[in-house]
Image (cartoon, rainbow, N blue to C red; front, side, top):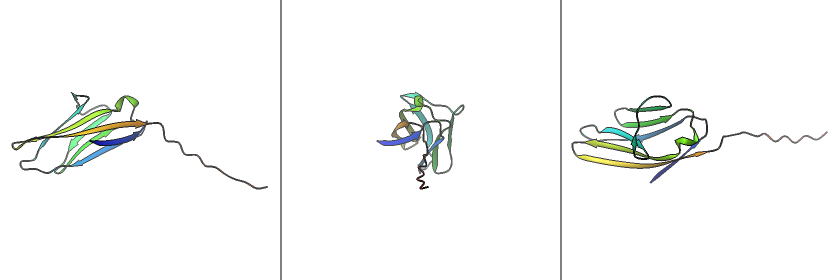
Length: 98
């Protein structure tokens, strides 16, 4: 099982290298429901990379995802757990001596 942490309100891309002949088709699911490109999701595939790109990550994006790859040789499934962690803040501690 793959596990990925995304930071709340940031953009999180996930890339998976894929090879096969013929080239596999991809299908993404979230908690068993098929995902489609659009809104905050950018789902695309190049020659050897499948990408799930979530813009402005929300807590509701935390879920069990699957990347399903299919061609004439069969189907492979990659389970992915996406966790969303709190906002990322940067604090700078300054020590001054007067």
